[in-house]
Length: 296
Image 1 (cartoon, rainbow, N blue to C red):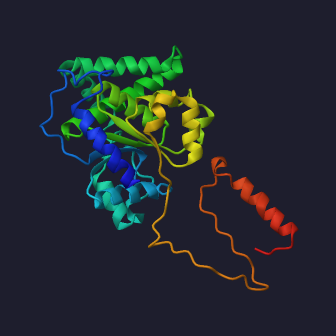
Image 2: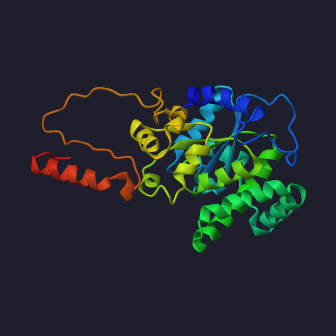
């Protein structure tokens, strides 16, 4: 992951100063940041951080920092872990994370008002994009306005920190917020796409728009990349990179174990008990083992 982002960020850091002509240069309503723009600097936008089932977020962020990146983290939601139950690394990450929803409705209203008065073009661009997402559906429009409010908060925070690139994990609502922030504030973004949920309803998740507007896209598998290639114009294929969700072999070492006659087979499954993890397939496999006389 780090090497892919390293290569892609070289292009992204240059493009922030030389934005593509199709999206025009940074407009006057967003004051320019000090030059030169620092390299290897980005914001990670996550739905929830740190999270019990998303330890790979924490490992990825900390590894990027170890390799010389300056990474700040913004999370839409507060952690789902009690502070007393956190490991030291998780507590450190929580202390340094910006939580978009943490300041409440009054702060969101203040940011919206401030942006409208000081940077009306930012506000109008974001609002138009949010309304377009609704496609005339009142329910979708209401949700789009909530995402728009969060996008203004995120963009305001990034601008105050001098940050110019956003990297987003997952393509659900968190990426909707990130895309709206990118459109409103004209900040480039990139995606890590996991699937499979967003592949089931690409229109609901605005998946095509998110991929087409991204600077680069990290896919966790060849299957993931194939689903995106099927969805978008081939001109976007070259910005898709397969980077698998690996593990640290210094922590998890494989070892060969010869089967012992009469010993009960041990099976370990790591994954939440939700349908998308395919746990029912494991249960069926266990049933086959029982039918063949295995104990486990």
